[in-house]
Length: 233
Image (cartoon, rainbow, N blue to C red; front, side, top):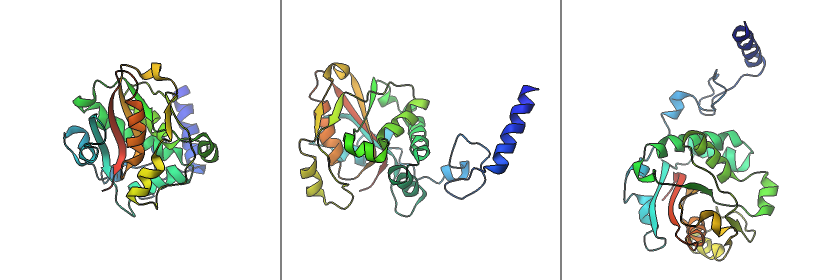
């Protein structure tokens, strides 16, 4: 009887508050996701988490001493993936970030070279920017990852010490210059002697990840890997 009642309530809510796929607009019965199965299959998977010497890992050669690095998807313009990232970063659609994190979680849990990760670190936002946005998109992605791949998230080991405008329109040199000295360790003891996975939304020049990763590696005994949702060359 309780099961029937729950189904009736769910059906009624769905009637008045339909739930649509962010990709194709089909009416989704499953409210736990925002992208239908067919659209999920169209996301451009990289398989980088399974491949050593992949393009993301190579982009950090000579810059950071990493164990592994990868991205779940290729970034392409005017795509479903770009739509989801824009929804997350600029339109307060945290469900988009949680979904992308869950997809990353499935990729990471099958990658044996990431099995020794002790904790996940989201790239921090400056407290002013986080207050303006209402959340840190990297933290939302990490929460999605954690729902599939049971690893602790450490949010307060490293902080962003200066506020910077969006780097979307900046060239490679300006991005590196803007990142100089903007991160600092807050609680080194929380990460000492741990294998960490640093997480962000997109890898482009890698300037933010490099600056953040260098500070994490300054803590005693830290080993570092990097994972992002998307990769764009």
